[in-house]
Image (tube, rainbow, N blue to C red; front, side, top):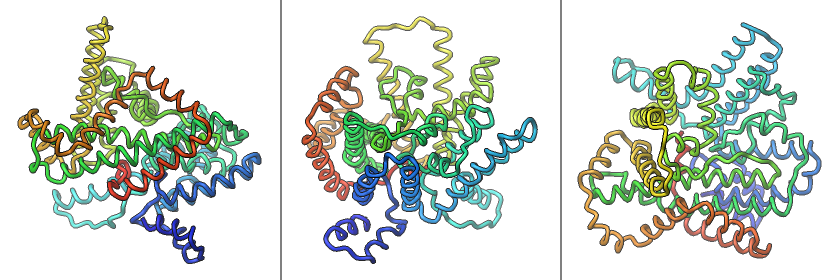
Length: 498
């Protein structure tokens, strides 16, 4: 918040004190792509970038410096942890590539342990010590660190690079500045997508390719992402937070509506951030792969995980599931591996039983679906069957999200109990009259999420055909709405805690 004030004051009257204040890190206001202060500085960044973008060397140095500054503004002192990880990855990958056999394998293990050590310490050490003190009667103490922003995502990216070098799927990067560019590229560093070295590193040495069409595409992605994240997700999140503060104070119907609100909030928040990241990368002339593919339109749980947070799903598949023997050997072992992978996915969110249960629920559901496909190979192909399958899959996933959103396992159980035992749909009329804006937004959100592909493509094409002046007004309207709604309904980014 203090940065927004600084941005306004900077326009009205420059001072070195304000500049130093704006450049400092604030624990209360870590930088995100959606912050007004970041968007304010981004305009100046893009202006300079346009002047030097044809010179690849200076372009890369400029983006690297800005990316590192962005991460410092996001995580403050943990910037040093990030730099240490980048340096170790670069050196260990080069050493590993020159080795064979046991030495190479030992270097891989060493590099993986080092990469994971930061994540394990910051994410799990406090709860391990807490449980040890509670159940074993020990008296260990630990500094109460907050979780460095983006550590899960850049650790996974680090591991993917090291394993790919070990497998000889990519060559080790020759320049540490190129590797630092790949790891710190600011559009994706906070919440993904996780980008693979083989997809991104070749772009670093390539000329920046932009055009009128790519600029329009990037602007619409950024504007759409801001609307998803700061307007829709923020508003829905405000209602969800009220319900989750004390579940017993609300009716089953209110929990039912909260379930839809959180399912939509989570999707719009994560996909909105991905849209902003992809749009900003494209604005700089870099392509990042899609991270969401309309997951709530999946007709089964397997399809859902192919469409939801695609970069993480693929990471677990390529670096854990397949190496453990997934899709090979006996079916029982494959099923157990699948459940184990989803267990790890739950554990990735935190060492809490509600996350572990969420992972196990999805693991069992995936196994049940695979058994169903094995013994019922001929599936109905009617539109009615598809609609029913989509609704079943969506509601299964939405019920599971209670364990992600609730602040405790007991709160999740209370919410689900009230939802299934105390829901009176007749109350919906009064609720709609009391909260018309919320109901309207839920209907609009549902319409966007479940919109047919043809309609979505038609609307996207029409927007892209608008004249350039319309884009200026569109972006100004979006920014104005963000400024108004952000202050009134500001919600913390969900995945900052993971």
